[in-house]
Picture 1 (cartoon, protein in one colour):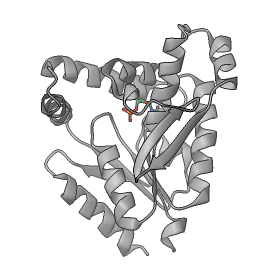
Picture 2: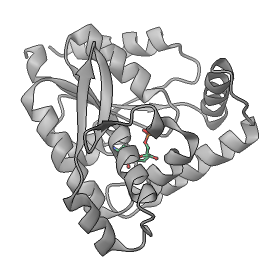
Picture 3: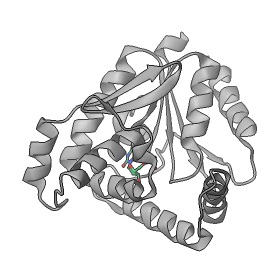
Length: 224
Ligand code: DC
């Protein structure tokens, strides 16, 4: 299989390191990377900025009709464009995590974004990270991984990231927010966070980034 034809799904709960690992894997294999969570974040941010009530489904549908979410690369760095405007930094704000999780439970939002995600994945080889890539977006992905880590480890990593950025952080609040998002994402009705039956589970609690990438690359290379 040529690299250009490979699709790799990396699903798992919040803070397991999916995007860091997916990015690295994509570079190692010379294929594209798509952060699907960023797309939910952009849509959640827009609905919030328009003061749309998330229970008002027709307002959400109308909003989607007038929305563009694009993922582009500038100097090798992924940028998320919302209606042509770069929101890559904005969507990482803490409050947007909850908005993304809430809006991702709405079926019309998922259907709208999944169509765009499949389009990106169909052009070239791609690593996609998210919650439902292996189960719903790309059920025939060439490789599926389910990346986990204990709640404590995930909360500590987020905490360290924020401290490294010079921001203040409360580890127990981070832990409860992550637990809440895990619950939201895995209990929604439509395409919840779930390990695909044929996904390989990788627990990164005691592994560094390089080790996780190595485990995944080994699997990919052994089957080609
Ligand atoms: O990966 P992330 O933390 O940026 O994702 C933000 C939210 O988006 C997450 O809580 C659930 C949702 N999401 C989803 O439902 N399906 C995906 N494929 C990716 C993200």
